[in-house]
Amino acid sequence: MYLAAEHFVRAPQWTWYILGYFFFAGLSGGSYALATLLRLVGDARDEAAARIGFYASFLTLLVCPVLLTADLGVWTRFWHMLVNVTPGDPGLNFTYGSPMSVGAWVLFVFGLFAAVSALEAFVLDRRGRSTSSAGPARPLGGVLGRGFNIAGGILALFFASYTGVLLSVSNQPIWSDTWMLGGLFLASGLSGSAALIALLTRYRADAVFSLGRLNEADGYFSILELVLLVAFFITIVAAGTASLTLPWFPLWVLALVGIASPLVAARGHMRIRPAGGSAVIARAGTDTLVVSVLVLLGVLALRAAVIFSAQ
Amino acid sequence: MASAIKPGESYGFFTDTSICIGCKACEVACKEWNQLEGNDPKFLADSFDNTGQLDDQNWRHVKFIDNVPDQSVDAGNGKAWLMMSDVCKHCKHASCMDVCPTGAIIRTEFNSVFIQQDACNGCRNCIAACPYSVIAINPKTGTAHKCTLCYDRLQDGLQPACAKACPTQSIQFGPLAELQQAADVRLAALHSQGVTQAELYGRDDKVYGGLNAFFLLMDKPEAYGLPNADNAGLPSRNDLGGYIAALITAVLGTIAGIVAFRRRGTS
Ligand code: SF4
Ligand code: SF4
Image 1 (tube, rainbow over the protein chains, first blue to last red):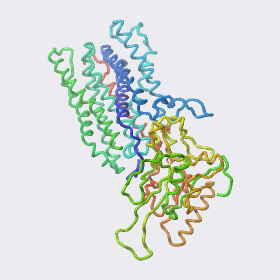
Image 2 (cartoon, rainbow over the protein chains, first blue to last red; image 1 turned 90 degrees about the horizontal axis):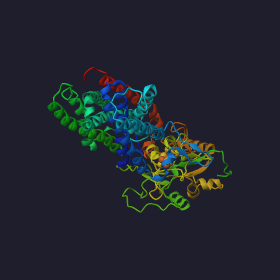
Image 3 (cartoon, rainbow over the protein chains, first blue to last red; image 1 turned 30 degrees about the vertical axis):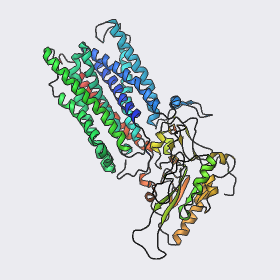
């Protein structure tokens, strides 16, 4: 990071595919991390929402390699990310200083975790068992299961954040003038994932129990995101590149709306209490729809604003 | 360049901008040898420069920088153009190599930086990284292209086409140590003639550990669109800070999740 940074660099033209990838990577990683937390530290009744999280993580992940591959100049060489084809230097590619290289591996390995966890959730749902996370019949139960989820959760947090670090590890204006993008994308991914799982509880009655907790978590994530956004702007103002964000002002505003919505929602009026009547639940359902859509739009807008401001 | 070209030795260019006449022979020779089709001709309305930039079709680009003062000056005291034949710097610490995920960018036996066309998959990470705006994607191949320091010619003991074609020896090719000596002599001569603004760029290790293709400039590096030493940072400088900020966020996010989801009798 520099004061009054100078940049004479060409833009890489990472546009729509990459925007889509960053969006789904944030949601996939965030959903897995939240599903793991719901399962491991939550109430037994949070298991239904956890399963939604594992499904959401896997489904959003499926899009990621497709978008990444489509963005390549030679899409048939997607596997060159992992395998070195330099004559006389065969083996696997891993450049620890290149987030793109590390990220390709994490996408691959995390993909396995997301697939296994989604499959496990599916098997459990098919069995029609109680949503209790305990019990010997869980395919991945006990310490092994918990360890699996924790390992997957750590990979998920990396997956949701590395895309921001990838942008910073460049010489582009804005991106390379700040260290905040990894954290910012992660906070926004977690917020978006809480909103996504909350939205999906509409289709699973036994998951409504977790709605209040998801809203509360989303409020915390939004505070974190707001702090990081302020830090981000401070660093790029110091570098003298903040003016590049001006043409994308509407996107930044939309990102801010996405951050503010859960803060308003988390004040408590949407919390579902066991004693709440059906009218309360219906009202909360409508609010959740609106808030979740705004949050998800904000997640997309934030990434679009960051991507396009520098190019 | 008198001595034979030997693998295992460092080679590069010393481009002396003080004697560049802007003839563009280097651009033409480069295209000719490397069979670059060139971009469609365009009138850029920007001095005598219709090439515009280094890219997949232009591996040499003669920059014409308008340095004419608005007010006329005394006879014999005028300034006209800064001319500079720009090229890949074959950086010792190369930003492009720093980030390439496929290992397509390698350092050759001549210590030049080379993109293997059959390994590159067109991810464009090197484009985001190169601080000199050197690399671009060739739309026909989908891969990243730039100056190869005429790798094929070096392997056959021939100097690069641009250096051979340059009529004023503004572009000199040779073993790096010899070029650095020649540059020091030239700089001392210019300074003794009162041309105090002359400076070497990339001769020492202040920018990217030293450039194999380095320059004698007649103004500050910024005037030529080159980052000065304070701004010459490798992309990987942001790895640690970026990951630490992400890690702190991950820890705080996890704590936030635990606080929100922790087991409670009611919710
Ligand atoms: S000038 Fe750019 S393309 Fe050439 S070696 Fe340096 S970073 Fe790589
Ligand atoms: S475009 Fe090619 S050379 Fe550049 S970073 Fe990607 S794989 Fe490497």
